[in-house]
Length: 126
Ligand SMILES: [Zn+2]
Image (cartoon, rainbow, N blue to C red; front, top):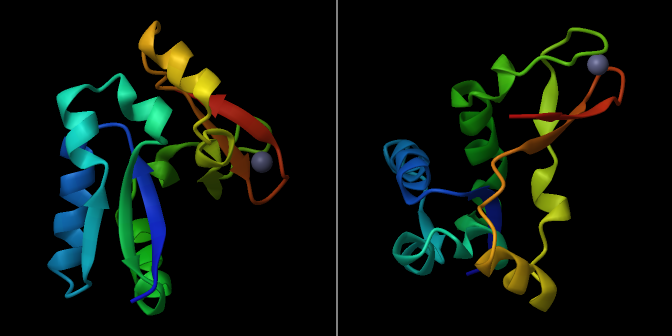
């Protein structure tokens, strides 16, 4: 069975809410690194977050479900004012030994980086 990362989360609570949403729509999914991060939330950055995994073939349907239910459409592009933005934080969040070290001595970063689909503006939103 081939799986893909559908979304990453900082908190097990949020991850389980979305997992429940997918399961109630008959989409098979599971969480990776949920327990390590549940025990110590400071590992969230180091491990690249809690990963919500779905089967490759369920990817498009799961994505569409997330889009209609996400809070991301509430984020507005400061440049053009459109709401058609997507979270690109995860691309910059690949764990390295350095990030593991930094994470152990700092608080998790809750800021997210978004890219506007309309004007390609990249901005940070808390
Ligand atoms: Zn824009």
